[in-house]
Image 1: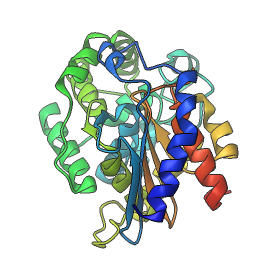
Image 2 (image 1 turned 30 degrees about the vertical axis):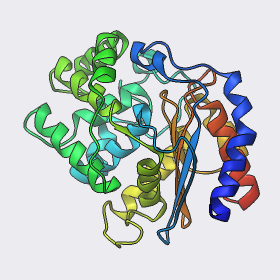
Image 3 (image 1 turned 180 degrees about the horizontal axis):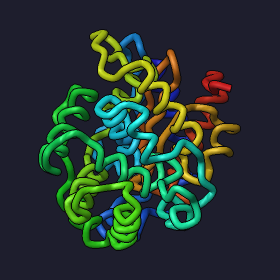
Image 4 (image 1 turned 135 degrees about the horizontal axis):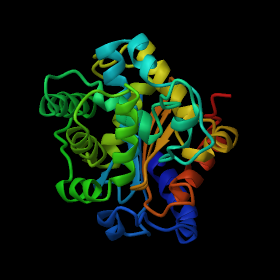
Length: 307
């Protein structure tokens, strides 16, 4: 075991008790089956080195972490002007699935791409004549970033689709106001597949490393996303990536990061590394309790805050 892995194993040990302070997501039936005690981390450094600890090979669905990846694809597909004509750039103090700001804002567009309404609007803009073509482009892009052959968890996607009434309401509201222009049910099918894309911590750390390296894959030097796209995505990760705790997270951790209700967290430490975390025991806003604690300790120990 390398020294780096020993350090990560110790962080896992110290953070493990915090899993008792949260609970797994239960509003998506398939996610209720996750083990609240699971905890894992992988770090992919920009020089190609990797280290990991915990149940790092266990696969989990991306959920809201996928919003950053889809945003990167759509920014390159459509350009900033088109994307931000449909979706705003501001944080929101409301829950990630709230409809409130859509009703009160003029024009009625989502405040940012990291809330559900904004993510649905972004997903609708993936280039493709059909939602099937959009999906093929998205999953090919994700596999390009991981260098792996990942797909989606059908059981989780179907479970999400059956319980997607609030997202359905968001879509119909946005369609009425011209934010989206495709069939709502087809969009929801695409979006639930996107959220159900499944990978392990090592795959997620590789994606984080691409963002940390300004869009270039460490090791190979392949440019996967543009530098400006990486910059925009990291900015949203800082301002909106950790749900209603993004401000607190920025102060305590200061690493661009995006969480999902499966317990996944992707971090991108600019110029240093990508981080993939998994800990399905969540706090009251949907962030991994132990995962956030590990990031706090890492940031403090290695001065990884960007501030």
